[in-house]
Image (cartoon, rainbow, N blue to C red; front, side):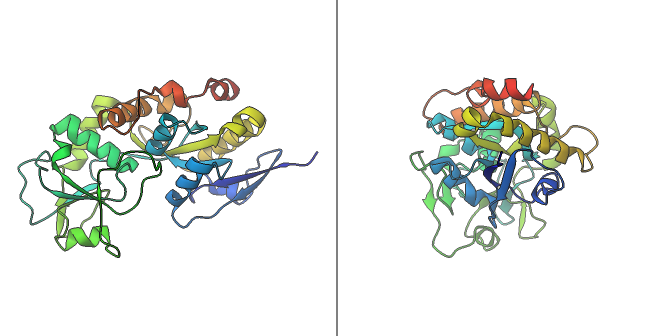
Length: 291
């Protein structure tokens, strides 16, 4: 019997490279990895047209996609996970009394519902009491869900976000960690703040997981199980960090982070209605992979 062709998009993560180069096989499937210079450019065609069978996916995008009725499901394998507090920078000439002091500030974001931005906005609101509506949000890309609200102003064509911050045309950028002397961390002692946040929530702020189509779940679950097994082998093939794992696999590993991101997304008005982790954690997948 001929193998089933599958189209996939993933970044060049060390755990995925053995699958890309064929060292780890997915029995029954012929894998075609579609190349994107920036992996996030694949998210919009996946969300809006199910352009691939399996695709690395920003977690906020996947949560919003489910909220807006897209036929996608999460496979619980983390591609990118980290603590976000260091990834927010303010121009060194901007005076601020605290991270909450954002009223009237010009804040640059790649897109308004970017996952890093969602985490940081949630953190600013929850931990520091920031009035997010009082800031002037400036975005550089469209969101992945066209019908989702986006109150940001589009940056002038040709402008680069980080350079605008360095030049003082933006006050703050969410998504930038830099040692450039023209900027400083928005959150003082960001590593200590990140550790305190981790201690409080007992999870990393997951950026990217894996999205699969309803067709894969309904008609090719055997291949989905094989692919998930390949991801587990790929993860086992690379050195793992000491201490808590920022890239867990399995529903128990992602549940705290998913619950918290949904809480933040709801509080930030990114979703059209209530959504639960169970809405992304399809029971058919959970039963099939035994987690």
